[in-house]
Image: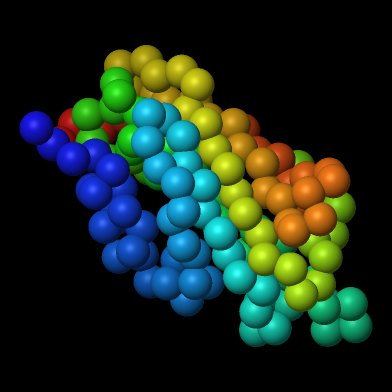
Length: 139
């Protein structure tokens, strides 16, 4: 039997961009995943405010969505982003880590559909939300 969780974990750990952002896969299984990105001053988009750049938040969400697809019971293997829409709700609180949580809620023969949120430690309102479509690839 193929250990999809281990495959997804190795896949994420092998992505240089994910390593550079220090993304940590904290939860994965049955079409759900969570990834935490620690606060890092090198990722700040606005030096005046200390707010993390939206591109780093996007990467955390995208990577988390891919992990959710790869761990879905109906997904046979790897995945790639087809389309990902991010709605930025507010600036992340400077100094706080960001956690992305994704759920793969539907899979067809070729496409997986995912929703995700990115929260900082305040947990009152999402920093960003995402919805996307990802390829469904064979092993």
